[in-house]
Image 1 (cartoon, rainbow, N blue to C red):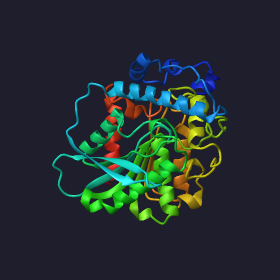
Image 2: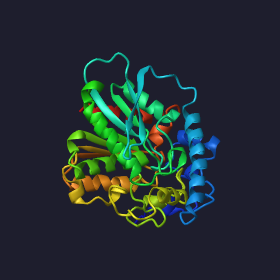
Image 3: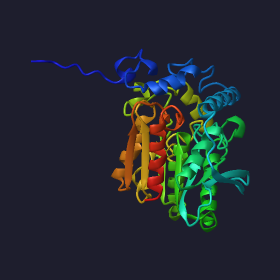
Image 4: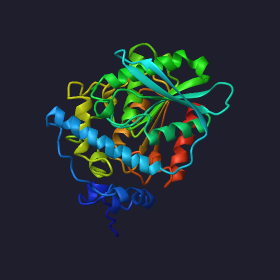
Length: 354
């Protein structure tokens, strides 16, 4: 009788494994990340979630600059996208100005599906006007969509420091504006979409719309690699990917620091802050959803858990997994893994135009 040994994947099976030595990792992703030293386990941050808030905020500013530089380099030199662009400024949740960056196909006529795009950055860093997010919106528009990117307030960084619920308040205001201007924008539907922290805000915007009796404003939700549990300081056993893919692009010591700048713990199980904790009553009646995750992402299992919760609550939901890449790896590598990039953009378009 032959005995087969089955090894647990990633760092569950080998705690010394790094992303660059994980046999599941797409070599094209590793080659793209290697020049930045992001293909292995990076150094832990100089602060933790218990450090004084001022120190954590200072760290976030530096981290934001680093991420923006990497993302700018990953899209540097790509051809310009020929779409129409405009900017509107609306009042946010506290009367604060919120810029809306609008991209649409050049010369398009007739109503088109619309996307309210919420950028990533853990709800605390990065900007909608960053070069990578500008490109994502423009190339989504090029598929035949009207895309509105929201410059919501962040928990830290250049657009901080505004912890929960400031950013969500701004996203809710942007949704209301887009709904009220459907005719002027020429949109036939509104899908709320975002990745990472923007995935959190996309799900939370839908949950909040239900709470406020405004679900008629949303036709669908497309959440990619959503950052939704807040359970990063002490990973729970039901989310094994936090250990399996520990320190794969997203540092395990970084995430609790970022989470603490959005929420100091007062809202640890509030589904508007951390949608992972949404119950059946919160989810029932929501519009159709897509939850997209990446195989080598520490956040993979919280996204998958949310998908399963949606299905149990009777929501029309679809899940997808992008193999071989880490956090948001389908969107980051436009030049290096174009097959994944365009598959995701066309899947978003297909969902919006259903």
